[in-house]
Image (cartoon, rainbow over all chains, first blue to last red; front, side, top):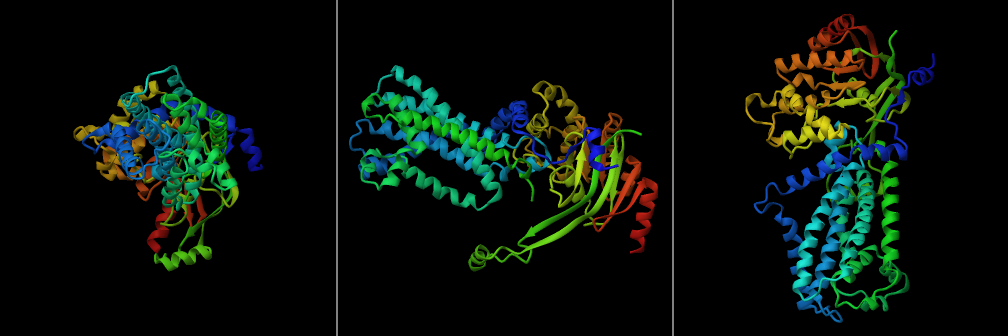
Length: 286
Length: 250
């Protein structure tokens, strides 16, 4: 008898076949406990050897902000037109740091867990998603510090602080998609890991973290200006600033920021998931 | 006749080895690789293999080093794509390789929990099975090792824990690649019992081992692979005898 007919009659499936999108989503949902536990284990493991432990979650972005303040605020003086530069700079650094860390973790997500991937069967998207969760947790800790900085530098607690919730939600969705895209690309092209720091640094300078991009956009050549205007990081950073910093006049906020934040989150989140799923059966193969 | 669980249909597996021609690491050579495609060599590991495995069977795979045993099993598990032919399986086969540590920097404890959750158990099931897994692995027999990072384990300990985790779940098809041979005698006894239990639960177990005794003890059917082709497929004693005669002759 034909093997195919025999297999079909006894309910056997082709080995190593990729499940459909719906089935994949269901399996991913079934593994939610795994994703959360994995994320928690990663946090504990990453600080296990440091004396200050998970306190580094807060120290790292603070030191980062300090370095940038010294260079851009004190030495270069890029703070023109911004009254509360410290709050402005810290918000930018913390929000960008979130995406930067997710991008790096996503790039390494398959390569660093090859043992796990080769040993057990689970939806591979669990890995980039868990690593996004790790960084989200770090961001929440950093946001508590940020709130303190913003208040200390003379801002008031206002209703607009509630907007932090949708901004973080959209950025997290965007980051999860980005992590999945980079995870698939890096699984095939291992050289990407070496390239990522340069890509991320370019992105950092083009995201208006240390200075308001308004000062440059008008002079930039057409296509570049469009790119800067629709840079997803500009949207997430500036929305966070307008939410937290009262001394930034709301009137100056460009209208397309919410649209940009939403569209990027949906495109990256959905597209990243589908892009990652398409190579599901290939992760971990030599 | 019992139900088939694995059907392998005229299977050919070829894998490519990148940079096989002695990788030179000088920058000029690297530039050269960017212009020309890196040299690739093909290894034809499995040739035209066909067989069917049934529920309740334990099948031993024997053959000299490099005969394609591991490649065949990895293909059955869906970890290696076939060049030609097809593999059908019931459920998702589980592959237990020699590479034992799961997450080296995490404690044995965390590895047990994460392994169970990754296999799709619920947190409640994981809690219920936890002690059983630790006892089965025998990790804590010589003190509290389960709370140490897995990188501090000996290879035998890591392999035992790894097997204990995988064996906690009932699998339709379980593939064991030399994992059992690393444990001590007592652990081997326990795992052979577990393999028999899995078979009674209508599972199929594949076992690769260079210890012919372990194959004779656990499997009633054996497949002898040589240069990627099936030499002999039948009752264990018959096949292992023929294989032993062959290796003695060489």
